[in-house]
Amino acid sequence: MEEQKKNPAQGLSESEQVQVRRQKLADLQAAGRDPFTLTKFPQDAYSADLKEEFKDLPNETDSGKKVALAGRLMSKRVMGKASFAHLRDDKGDIQLYVRRDELGDDAYAAFKKLDVGDIIGVKGEVFRTKTGELSARAEEITLLAKSLRPLPEKFHGLTDTEMRYRQRYVDLIANPEVKETFVKRSKILKEIRAYLDEKGFLEVDTPILTPFEIGASARPFYTHHNTLNMDMVLRIETELYLKRLIVGGMDRVYEVGRIFRNEGMDPKHNPEFTTIELYQAFTDFHGMMDLVEELYKRLAQKICGSLVIPYQGKQIDMGHWERLTMIEAVKKYSGVDFNDWKTDEDAIAAAKEHHVELPEVPTKGAILAEFFDAFVEDKLIQPTFIYDYPVEISPLAKRKPDDPAFTERFEYFIDCTEYGNAFSELNDPIDQKGRFERQVAERKAIEPDCKAQVDYDYVNALEYGLPPTGGLGFGVDRLVMLLTDSASIRDVLLFPTMKPIEQ
Image (cartoon, rainbow, N blue to C red; front, side):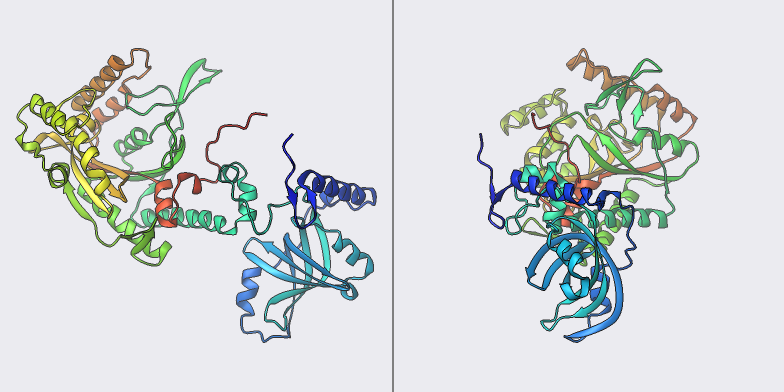
């Protein structure tokens, strides 16, 4: 049996500490003081607010203000008739000064039995100690919930990365800076919504459960609806429903949407993630490019306080965005010029010469995209728009009027990573139907058992008329990673997908 890790502070193993805490709870319950029967506490102040309010209070001075604080007991230092402790509430930590003469003998004895991790309420006066720490002089302490498990050691914290993700509730207690990441995440979403709302976009919700798998390359999760006795899929995008709304006359819409893809996991991918997709009638992909640049500059300034932000040891200048066509980018970084390829065979020969992997359907356009992946993407550290994508890899984008082999599509890259995707939306229903059918046929040729279908209802919607429309989709999680300098997507998801521990 694995040896129990000792707690140096108490000389007890974790299981022994749990036994001690359970006995304390049993004693309280036997005495009629079960903390779990309490329903509320009149909290009226927070640590950070008090520190700001009394930042000019001199040392060894009472504020004259009495408060009711509530939170978790994070430390306790008993010294005879007086003790010091620290309380952590929603906004930070504050010191407590606890005197037996102030509380009374019984209440002070009860305080001494409290454990680090217990949830308590404290009433008392705010003052500043002679050493300059703003504190609360406890006049009344109430145990609101008993912590039956010890917190991770103060000086070691919760450092096991796997356990941090599995037990985020402990991670948030042990590592206060983690909370700041998720506070920032909330602020980022609030700022994005504010920006889009100011631009006249309407936030909407579209179905997460959809009736069938569309022909896209992303793999869905399947489920079953018992009443309708039909298989359904969790959505892999929000695009087709949102564009139906543009057909219906809602000219500017967006959705903050949960997306599900039954694919691999790595530091930039989780099976469940959040995107924002937005669509604007009567504009094109250049309009979406301008919107991205404006939005990202605003987020950098509002969230990070500067247009130049640190990310994993690099300085990313959000104030400057390069714009290159895919052909230009491939020529710049590989020396290969797409315009020299007259046939698909020319492209295949060039791919073999440069040791570039051939796509499943080796056309000129698809091979150009492979050259981009091989030679370009890992060079794009500073913000860069790559536009004019081959039609083979852009089934929902409008063709370029002067070159129908390419589409009015862009993706943008920061630190060698794709952050978003945008089009001038394809609104020709005949072209769209043909592309969908080819896409599904190609999928079924590769995977004969796949259940992909053409979304003919979407084609039907297009037949009523989709105005010229610009569309954009980007991952929220990657954006939060960038703006919080986080290395892994798991650092910006409160509860990332994890394989259960075998019991």
